[in-house]
Image 1 (cartoon, helix red, strand yellow):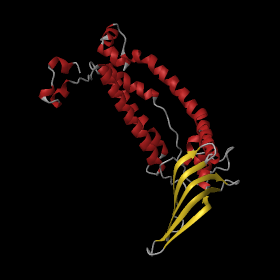
Image 2: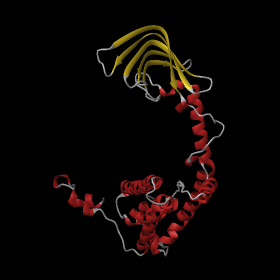
Image 3: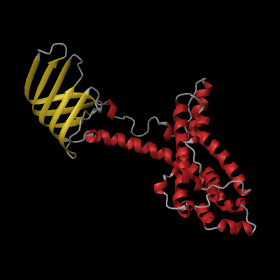
Image 4: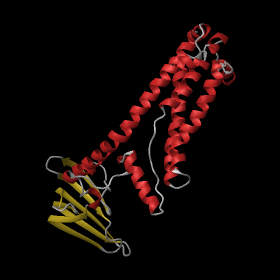
Length: 313
């Protein structure tokens, strides 16, 4: 966008006429991109993994203390396996519930629907089970195979014990770390250990492309003679989306074993970096110029505003 502004105001032409090449114009931003890429690498390697790990541990600890976290008033929650839970209101401080409806699918041959005017949800001391105490309600039980069988139970107090393992994390002080919670050295150690056992490991490391965007952005800005901020922003967004698609797609395909993790994570840098080098070389030799007058043919005649307006874009 900065180089596009220079080009639109003919400042690129002035600089070139003064003997300043495109390479020299790009030298300061290119150096800044190297510094920024290095700082981002340190951040991604030293700060981000620990932050991701602490965030996961914190969310696990919160879910242990707040079992109502997965419940939202007025919506069915299916976080607990074999149960669909609906509550009308929740007291976050006391974990008290009101207007409770529970569909129990633990027995495939039967359908149990439990309703209660109020209830309370909490974990057992060992965090293995989720307990729901219910007051003043009914249990409606029907048989799937025999629709003629139906039973209704009225209760003053009823307790349901559910599996709470999916909410708990017993090693909240550490435990195993996921791929986004590891630094480069740790991942290399894991890879080397697995290679020693003749196993494969998808080393998943996100990399930044600050340098690549300089190589692409600067020559593209110079090539776009007219168009202003809107065109520059559109082109920038387009290349960002292409890079993001390469990065996310490569990561997922590498995880599934379609190709090596190196290709999955570096394909975006390699492809766009090669394109950036070509664009920089051609732009410095003034062999490429992007104009948008050709898009005039794509605009219906009744929407055209005249030759001068089209050429401005």
